[in-house]
Amino acid sequence: MPLATNRDRLVMLSVVGQVSPPRYDSRSPYRISHDGHPRVLPGTGGVTYNVRVGDRVRGLVGDHVEPAVSLKNPDETANGGLNVLACVGNRATVVSGAARGAEGVVTGKHGGVEHVMVDFPPETLDQMLPGDQVLVRGFGTGVAIDAFPRILCTNLDPDLLGRWLTEVRDERLVVPVAKTVPARVMGSGLGRDHVFRGDYDITLFDPATVEEFGLADLRLGDFVAILDADATYGRHYRGGAVSVGVVAHGDSIIAGHGPGVTGLLASREGEILPVLDPAANLADLLGLR
Image 1 (cartoon, rainbow, N blue to C red):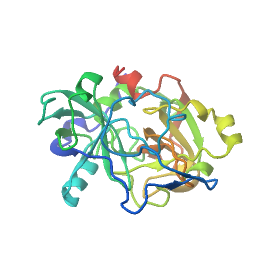
Image 2: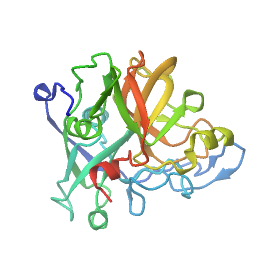
Image 3: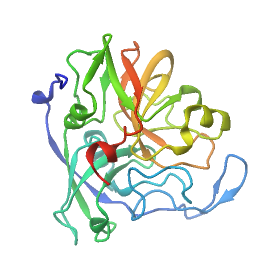
């Protein structure tokens, strides 16, 4: 049964972003790995032709790789509007360039670089260029679940919420996730005072933890539950809390970094019940592949 929400009272706004080109520091292209090796690798931005949600994050020869298309605005405040108001699952439409009229789906947000990622099919990606403009119908900021007012929902399209979350068990919200992750391995993004934009990195440098939680086959677009982590008023450790998000970008060699999780749900009172489901992925849920 669909969960009752405040969907009918939410405001939908247009936000536009440009396809962001890949950028490198003019002084040096090197990234220093957590174990002391300098590497030059593909990174963020641009049109990533051969990486989309549903693909595994480990094994790519890249660092913080963003799937499909990365959006950004040159104006900081306009980019803030794009990053806050675009929600995972929102419909996106190309409004300039050769792919004009093609439609895609928002799949995540990346802090630091302040990108919004959008998935498009391969035939659309082949037509897109840096600078092309994409319209997002920003809808979902402020969404709330009637039966769980203490669970914070962020960056979450109400239609995606309705397809993903359908069950309550023992007065807890059942949340299908592909993986659970212990708070002890969370890195970049920790301590930020809100989760309405950006992401929170899973570090994969401890082999025992990767083995214990099955993180070697983590996929872009996976829903994941971070255990003993609260994000209601900023990301921090809290025993018994659960934060849930979607894997938005790829792995990293840099200490404190790894696959980034865009926050979708947070409960500091333990009202979220994560249930493992290998198909709990945006690509599977929305039929994107």
